[in-house]
Image (cartoon, rainbow, N blue to C red; front, side, top):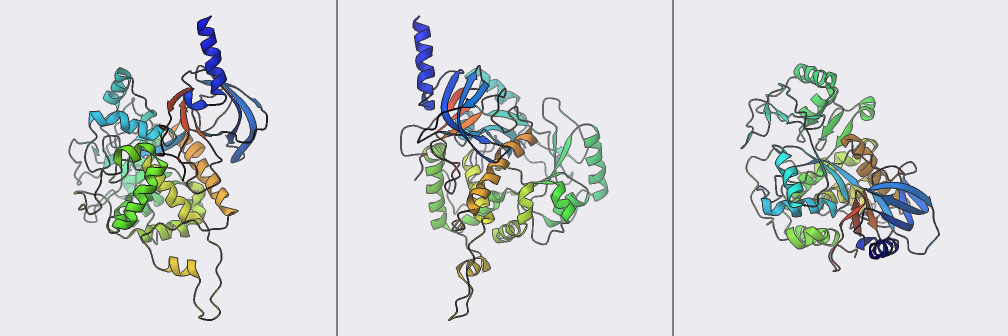
Length: 459
């Protein structure tokens, strides 16, 4: 009888305060759920979860301040073994690093570049760590004349060997060395070979123009890293490939020269991500020298932001990858940096007329005519902003989750697993609205909720 009363109390409380939920069985009353088909939130619905599965979604009662539910986000490229400070993640840090993804609403992440996740998976089980659902790409292929780095994380050349414990994604690093790299003939042949064996070859271009064009010319369906200015694109190609721009990697490098802007950004990331605010915000010095052996060019970030804006049509092809593990990019916080860049750069500013007296271009024209290190606020047509945010949510959920093969498919649906973040207000209302989250549910179980402090709350 006592247990029955406790269960009833838990279910009753969960309808009003999901943050205290500790059971895999829950009922949520009068919530608004992200509808992937309509790219918008539903009306008021009642949701019931039993043993980690959503068993029913029914019409609910209208209430003045509902909770908003977004499907668990998916991240297509992280390196768990890199700690964002230029070093390796220690065992003592791992549980916090895994929590960092959950604190930003991520249910699924894909590791690229880690030697193997088997020891980590074993440690998660042994230590009962809370973790997003992990998957790992095949070992990346690297041009044989390039250094494989300490630990030999990469295969040498395009001799394809597959590990059944990893997923079907086959990263190929196209970085050149003294104008030497994979030939287009070899790239095309290995792409076909991988596809015929059921794998998906993925091109990592490291923002190099030649590598980008090689990837396009040889038919790669998925490309990572920023697109350089002047890359030769055709309309058909724009429809036929997915692009994970990873702008934040270069943006963070550009902030090294601007300590004041870095300080402002760190403050904002701390407000939007409680784990970053409590653990990592003081971990970096912006005057640090460039890390040795970096694979990214020293080009100004302005080139890549301009190309990203120019190729506005390509946003329909976006795939999400935060690049967490690169310098300055920590779990969850890296996603906040990338999403803020997307929204700022994809938002169309209001049209500004010429000054009739001075015959000068308006504010936005002058601003974008020369690059400013500051991330430009989204002072834009308010009707356009929600549409951009809807597209970003779709990319974070069903587009990238479909790429990862996530079990929920980036959706909240009857019969599917209960992976979702809970929000106190409509995430479409404001810039960076999908962060912070009020709590995170994975497999029907509460896996994250921020402490009752100012950290992680909306300002």
